[in-house]
Each structure stands twice: as C-alpha cells, then as structure tokens.
Length: 420
View 1 (cartoon, one colour):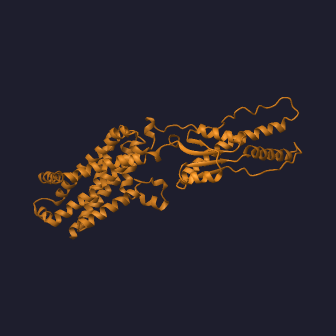
View 2 (view 1 turned 90 degrees about the vertical axis):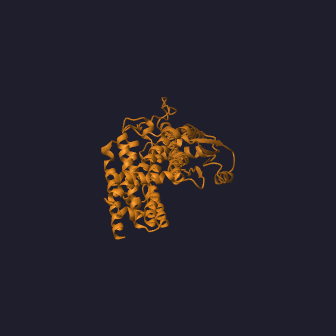
View 3 (view 1 turned 180 degrees about the vertical axis):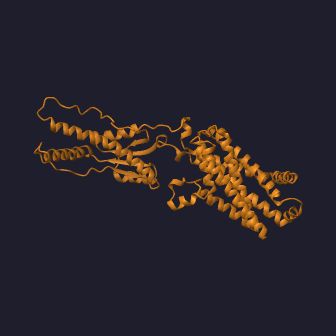
C-alpha cells in the first residue's frame, strides 16, 4: 500500500512541477468547449430562431402571390425583403450570398392556378355526368426558388416542404371554391368558401419524460460539453504515454521494477494519479457548461439529478483513457511515435464516436465501426443521463464496455512489457 501511495505522490509531483503542461491540460479543453459551443450554436437552433434572409419577387397581383407572401410572414422563419427586380438580378444576389433563399412568383400565377383547378373540376364533373363543360386548358405553374450555392440539402428540403404546405392550403381552398361554384349553379343558397379551412389532422408533441423543456433538446451545449469533455479526457493519452516512455529511456522504469513488490502496484499508482487529473478536467468542463456558457448567450447545461451515475461514467471514461495511454506507452519506443499515434488515433475514435458529426447521419458501414469506439460509449451514456434523465441501470452497459476496454488495454500493455 505504501508503494501505491508513493507512486501516486511521485506522479502528481511530476505533473505539478510542469505548471505549463498542467495549465494546458486544464485550460485548453475548457477553451475548446467554449469555442465549439459558440460555433455550433446556430446549427443546433431551430429554424424559427434564425430569421433566414429571403428575397421575394412577387409579380402576381392576385390572391396566390399575396397568400404565399403572408404564409412566409406567418412562418416567422424568414426575414423577407420585397424587391421589384428581374430574374437575372435575383440570381446574382443569391449567388453573391446577399440572401440565403430567393422566390420568384410569376405575374399570372393566380390566373394560371384558377384555370388549372377549373379544368380539373370540369373534367371530374364531366366524368360523372354532372357537367358537359370540357374545359381542358391547362398550363404549368412554376414558382422559381433559388438557394445560395453553399446551402445544405437538408435545409433545402425543409424550406421546400414548408412552401409546399403553404401552397397546398391555397390549392385546396381554390378547389373547394370552384367545386362549390359549379355545383351550386342556379341555386340561391351558396356555400361560403371564404371561410378559412380547418386543420382536420394535427400533431401534438408529448414529452416522454417529466423534465424542464430545455433538458429535452439536443442543443449546442448539451452536445458539445459532454462530447469535448470526453475528447479532452482521452487526450491525456499523449501525456501518459510520454511519461512511460520517458521513464523507460531514463532508466527509472528499470529501477522501479527492481524494487520489492508487484509491478502492478506501480502501474496502479500511475493510473490513479492520471485518473485524478481526468476527474478534475471533467468537473471543470461541466462547470463551464453550467456557469460560464449561459453568460455568453448560450443555454445552460442541464445534467439532471443523478450525480452518482455521472460520476460512474466519468470514472469509467477516465479509466478507459488511462488504460489506452498505458497501452500506447508500452507499444511504442519513442515519444514521437507515441504522441503521433495517440493524437491521431484519439481523433479517429472521436470522429467515429460522434463527437463532431452525429452517428445517425453517417454511412451504415461507419455506424457499424462506431459501435467499437469508447468515445461513442461514453457520449451515449452522457446523452442518456443529460437528455433522457437516465439512471445507473441505463448507463451500466456503457460503463461495463468502458471497463472492459480498460482491462483489454492493460492486458495488451503487460504483454508488450513482458516481451521487451
């Protein structure tokens, strides 16, 4: 036991003497969380909060153009700029990035829509013998929509669906009006078609858990704080592997091996010291999400009430990172080899684990590989706790996987150590 405490004290003293390295170890992850949360805040926000700049050229003087314009205003998504310019100027403004979206409504839009619907109604009534009017004059009605060159496909689909939903109500209203007009010819009593159509089907979102509303939303803070906390924890691999290689090169590692007692005790002391560092890192980075980011205009990190489950995942993640550091330090011979492999491998595991891009948008083959990333297990566990208000039993499978990863890394490290 004295040997274990002596090893822990030795490792902590070495870390404390390198004040610059210690500051980088703590301050850089905190700065990274703050910057990434600020950068990714807009993509995580709902479109209704963004006020997308839209250039509208409404050449139609009828009801269709006015209804589309009013629908865009009512959506509260767009910052609408009405201009009377030609199509080429619209294209140039969108191309130059002055507006994100451009919509051109032709001057005969309402008339074309009425003619097309009237032709459709006449054909249907003729087919069932209620009319002999064979009006089949139709013409395509095309509303031009332009997007900036760098607009994402998912954003285009969202905007197009919103516009289609708006125009479908206008089409239905026009269809009802013309049907009523045809069916009530000669009758004194007419159907009122100016009344706004009711929504017969609606969707009511029901919360699956009883928590504050902000806890249910995957915003930039709820994702980035746990994600980059895990990333920062795993980057301790570089320091830990470098420490092992330095001891081996200087000969102190061999002197430690000749001392009485088990080598596993020495290794446990080193792991415990670095695990202590990862726990402090985690606490500081969670405090950034709770106390600092709200002062920068971002949402507050909601961690729930199950602090024991959070502590378990932090410790298991720290063990997985320190075990990986021991393995890297045992396999490679030089500090350059270990630092390069350690940094690149952590970045690859982070990419597979959904730290940067959510796993569900990745190709199927990559999603399969993500299942083997310890960062993926840890991030999923944090999401279960922060977003779904999970319990210890909920995150237990992820904790077990992280512990098994830790044991496997130690096994590989001891195998290479005995070989050398």
